[in-house]
Image 1 (cartoon, rainbow, N blue to C red):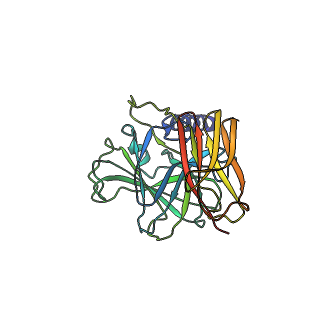
Image 2 (image 1 turned 90 degrees about the vertical axis):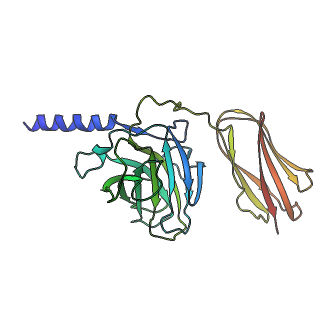
Image 3 (image 1 turned 180 degrees about the horizontal axis):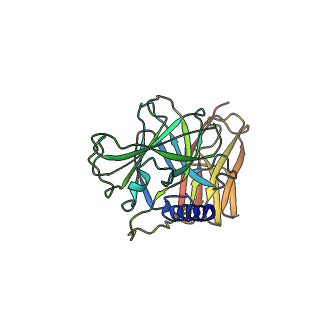
Amino acid sequence: MKKLILLILIFTIVQIGKAQQNYCDFEGLKSIRFGFATGQLDTFSLNPAPNLVDSSANCGKYIRSTTLYDNFKIHPYNLLTDINSYANDSLQSPKIQMKIYSSAPAGTSVILQLGTKNDDTYPSGIHSEYIAMTTMKNAWEQLIFDYLQSPTGSLTTSTNIDKIVVLFHPASASRDTIYFDDLTGPSLMAPINVPQLENLPAFKLYQNIPNPVKENTQINFQLNSSGYISLELYDLLGQPVRSLINQNMKTGTYSIPVETSTIPDGIYFYILKRDNFSKTMKMIVLK
């Protein structure tokens, strides 16, 4: 009898796992769009500390505003299914999960709200809420969200869910920085009319650190495919100052040291080019 119960439990867990979907792994798999954000949302950021929990090169990054109920919105490409199995207190109910790396102290709450994008008011536009607590600071962890409540006054049914609202450290004015990855939850209703695999940008160029710079700085960039790369430094008049890179490079993350002790104080621009794509960032030299 015990073996039979164990087999049934294993089968249930497997079925729950099959019903879930990773909405975005920041490596090409994507079945969502990012919507309005109260703070600063970067939908393609470098992973600050890859490890066994999250080994991806890329992730999402969010800098919280001082608004008490600061949030950002996620819009799946289609309606979410099987919401009622998540919206209950049963031990066997499936759980929404997300990987988090945060500057906030351990014990910080994270709330997810499932609702409809046709109604951005609370509580009418929210069907159900889920909560998790961080257990560490400046380290990746896998958060598992428990059902919190279905708010009184909700007018949203479980068959009309196409919005996820993320509230990090709600009821706080703290300017926390959050990295996030692999938000996984209810499957999208089939068929998904928008392809899950989207073309990533050829590269992403980041602000040099530190900036302003006295003598030494680092320019970081992410290549999403191999190719010929040039990285050039120009002065405010558009005159070339230094050629930093001109070569073929493989897919990956790079950090290029730049020594500025011989460069006069002023405003400069560095331009990363690959094929027909280019990106310009400003550098300030101030000794």
